[in-house]
Image 1 (cartoon, rainbow, N blue to C red):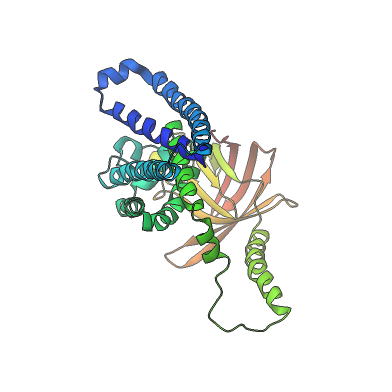
Image 2: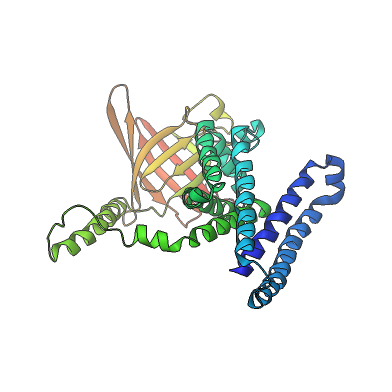
Length: 365
């Protein structure tokens, strides 16, 4: 306990001190360079760890000799932890409201989704709805205010911890900056520590609180119903995936050559002809899109269909749905020369004979 509280107190003081460096003029920050801030992050961790080890040993020895007021020190260190969490989490909350976080980036909006990295994808997603960002901010600010009062610390930590754990997962799996990830981890650990201080109350509420309703006597069947509640959910989705299994053809395919009625379609025909397809998207679970634009997906000019592939017959069935009039056209195409990276389609659509030579576009990592 002494070690953990000393560690958090040191982290809090050093972390807030580091925040003040953002107030330095841009010229000074540029001179310091990114490496300085990286080393500073590791320096904070090392100094905090050394302080926690040294001070907790000192504190323990003083306590054994009754030469220190441990109760007052616990109150001070936990107070530092609470106020540090309030300051830091509120900073992120107000940043969302004032749009310094998740603000619109006009150049990023025009970037294809496939070219966005994890950070850019996350920022685009959260910037799409300002209202959603404000709701997250209100949870952060409201929960932080509750930490200011000892009687509501447990409630504040219980509100904030799920929010912060979610942010930790986003920061990790979407490759957000190391500093943001480290901060989110520290905030989550601080909130978890505050919750564990009240573990007896939590156990009483979540594990020992009974229901006021009368028990329904079902005997063995209650165990069966508990199992079925989960098993049926799994079975429903499993049935759907087996009903429409993934296709070996799934992926993005470039049309190397399109021959219609014996004539090869010219490379620039897609500019005026929406049936001069240059890209074929074979999605999982039976959805297909034929796109004329070779550079980006254009929904307004693309043609959609459902497809079924019979590998034993090497036959592809395409089902096109036309709205005016309401009807469906089915096209049967023979698939040949399929090796996982190349294939050829031969079929008839309406009154046109079609031959497509396709090569698979590898997904960018």
